[in-house]
Figure 1 (cartoon, rainbow, N blue to C red):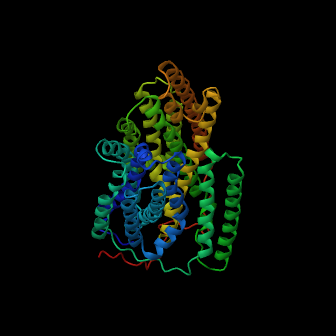
Figure 2: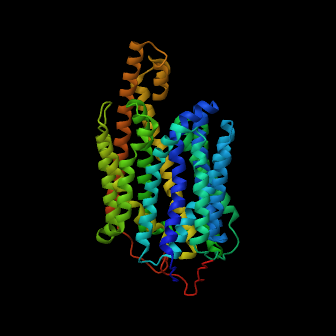
Length: 513
């Protein structure tokens, strides 16, 4: 392994690219109300403005990881940043919801090349002994993005229009590209066989069908014909993809995904743990943002500050997770992180309409502690389970697993909360039956006594529904924690997955220019 002398400076640059990508989504969330007013965007438009990025990002990750390895991780990173930054600039100039949705999709495509490339570069430039610290710092960067995103969004909207949520990316990306050229080494591309185009098409279509079904299910209904058709299509495409990957491997070709990874229990547990923690996190925080802004009446800036306890706790334990892993091992660290997430969710499940903010902060901070503790060892386990020439593929799987977990969390827990809310409100209050924002909008046009009644009923119903969602999320996290402790890793055999340290002796040298 060739040791790169400026690897820690390069890590800072790679972390900056992660901050830029995670910052965008959290900034956008605070800008949605202003954006809706300026572009006359309806609820469906707003959903697609958010989801177009997620749908393209998740669908393209595996293909982007493979192409990135062939282009060279640094080239893929620079290209992805350029597409992401260019898409942001044009998105800021949009004058209709349709235009903004299209450019958000372009931004998602750029981000799909960025995420796997950063992890692949870290795996290549750091020796095995330093990788846990490097992955811890990388994970902490995600917490920083979550931390400053809502606050930055709120501050921008105090002085500028919704387009500032996109313009903010342009200088960040420009600086990041310059820093990548200066500090990140040019890693030689992988010289593999022919690109598995059919596998790429099958994986992209499967993920797209699944993500779209899950995103749209809360509004269309889980039993809707289109939702069921998409879920069935996703299942068939996954089955065909698996069969095709086995066939390619049996013929001595280069499959898009090494399926033998999933036969490794340690890899599978790490991957599933990561999916579960993003499932409970995204699903819970999505509802919590509505609680803070509507039930408590906080401004976007103050509500953004509400994310600080979670983000600070996550960043802190991400940075120290290598020390914890050294004492407890990967399985012990993952289990402890899941138990902490469970405890935080149980605290949030007791939230009431008038609950003091400090109690909400305690719950989110404990979740942040657990998540920060898990991200680095789980990501290291996933990305470190293959030889380094396959690092981009493993990194793409890492990102796909997290993204699917988050999307499923928002959709599944969102459906639970929505159903519980509607059941509690009933149909007597008319449009207020639909959702909490509609109830508050309706109350604004009513006389004071009637408005007060609608708000009280809606706030109580939503808070109770949110508590139910948090309780279900806690149950999922607890079951995963128990599974981590009970499932013992199989005794490794030489024929099984090769770990990252087992690399060819004649590995190409890194290029520093």
